[in-house]
Amino acid sequence: MTHNVPTPEQLKLLESAIVNKPPYCSGTLQLPSEEYILYFGKDDVSYRLDFTNVKNNTLKKLAEACDVATFGVNQQDVLDESYRKAGKLDSKFFAPKFDFESSGLRDIIVNNLLEGKGADHEMRAELYKLNVYGPGSFFKAHKDTPRSEAMFGSLVLIYPTIHEGGSLILRDGDKEWCFDSAKAVNDTNDPKIGYVIFYGDVEHEVTEVTSGYRVTITYNLYREPAATVVNHTSLRTHGNQLSNVLETLLSDPTFLPKGGYLGFGLRSDATIFEVCLAHGLAAKFYILYDDGKGGALTICDRLVNMGTRQVETSLACHLRRRYGAKVIRRATNSRSDEYDWFRDPVLGRNKNAVDLKVHWVTGMTKSTRVEKAFLAYGNEASIAFMYEYGCLVVPVGPHGSREQPIAYSALDDSEEEDDSEDGDDSEDGDDSN
Image (cartoon, rainbow, N blue to C red; front, side, top):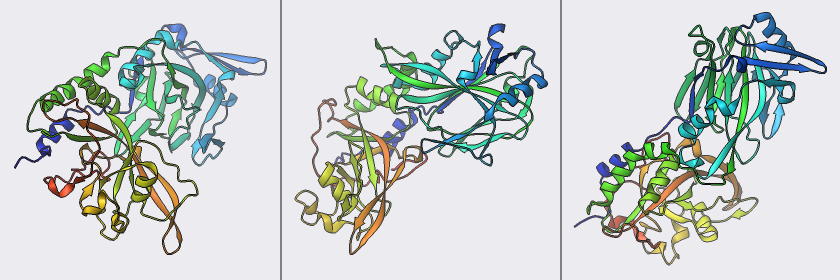
């Protein structure tokens, strides 16, 4: 009997072809000498700094001109020097001679960070803040507060000053990277400026400066609709390996011979999405919902806002009936929600039936997880939680007609060979299979 299930080797081949790029890029730039000049001041007094030959007493004057830096919490600016100790100037109080457009950073951002996500958008960099980290200054781990829905990340420039400490630590899930600005901007005799560009949802911190002054300016990065579609070569480069492997599998009669669904926990989603479209596969973004108690897992094509709605069934049953969510795995806790499906004309026929059998190439990740509370009713009211994960689901037609649309239908999970790819909440890059 031929099972309509990808082999572990086939799924592993797909997974290994995905290039998971770090959510940031960094480096140094050598600029024209005039672009190391910075003007600053308040009221009618202004000063000029030349970072090609700057002294600590001049940097101290810059530090003294700064206000105490705050940080964003729930769309509010908070002052707490046990969490962040630094100085800051708003953009109206300083003027760098640095020219973003001629620096080459736009191409670096598009080619190394945006991938396909910027293919139908332009981006702009907006000068935001100047920060000075003197001895004893630091900023504990945090995520930036987006200034609008169009904001996707930040660009931090580090001027060439003699300092120790002040490294920028970036974290995404269980992965960590370090940009040692003190070393990067001072490892040659020629002055150069350091840069770090990262997504807004990346956790980061500035370690304590032990000596000298670390001076940075920050740009907020925004997406804007493009007048014309831009063709980004980086997407083709990073998608080549995945495209070749996918093409090989789609031509293999043993790979999902009757068709099926592939799932990807969101990581390099732009590349995966574009590669699938290039092969005629209608990839679609979904939210995976999990009650965290072993209940059935569902996927839905929308974000659900429970508000104050009272949920009197299992979470999966509620999402399926009210929002059209699809059950992709039945409850692993037999007491969890099977009673809700007893009279269901589709799922009630046996305990293994699901709306959609998804074969997960990569599992869910903590970086896309959102926890939400809602009001659950059983014998009495209580607060329950649901967990949302971003994922990409790709329908694959039968061999010979891979682009053929697949209709949603209830499947008996027991009829397929058990491959354990039921979309459970594995995290940090671990597969669900």
